[in-house]
Image 1: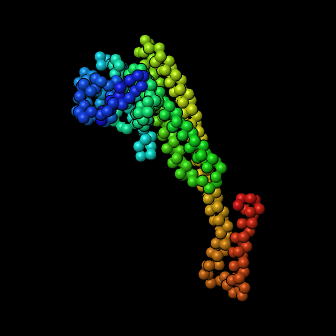
Image 2: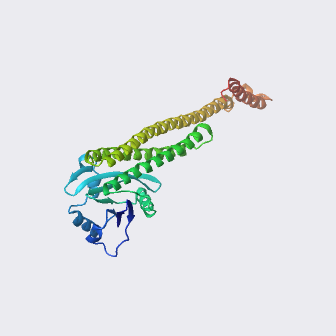
Image 3: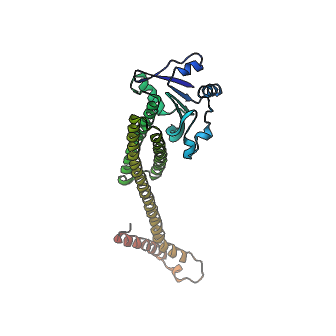
Length: 317
């Protein structure tokens, strides 16, 4: 799917979708957003920029030389964005191709940042003067969205922390599952932030003739660094809560084992007495006692109660 946008009077506006996408339609736009483009759309874009489009494997390369470079078709930046699928955060690479006053974005997923940008554009809230400015706007919004998710994770950890540390009846196994999910999301955010720092550093080196965009780069870089600090704090909090939950689980298990051990010790003397008088030897003086049976029962009862009272007195129960 191709969406066309045009810069008009300092605002980005979405162009009506033509009945048939042609090169002339592309030339009228300043930004083409290609979401899961089919073969025909990829061929059309290839003819327009006169260069091959990156495929999925090329977009997922981690080397700097493969993610940020300049060639005859323009400036190439492959940026990691955060997406959500089946309740879990995932990373998705978006390829930016910037040439003159034209920007192409290629992605294989529906990303919240782009949905938000389209909504803001429809209301006339996205200001930009050039395709490079628009690219920086997208990256700036990306960092803002990551900041919102970091705040959301922090709020969830605060609720989980209160439940785990103050509620003795909390479900610790469910707490571990929640922590694992938050740790996964936090790790994906860290990847996106580190990738953003790398691409902003690359853009700063190649936008020397545009001081306004240089300043925007520095601003977004500072925001990313601040988020990385908060991100590290969340990792520490996750590790602390994980250690606490494991400690509480060990305490609960030790309490269960202690109860079982004491119960076994309490019932051991009565078992010994019952075993002795359960033997069927011919010469056992106690077999002729008139009160032998009640005496044996009493001995078993006393031998069971005495250890219990002793443990209670020591505070072990």
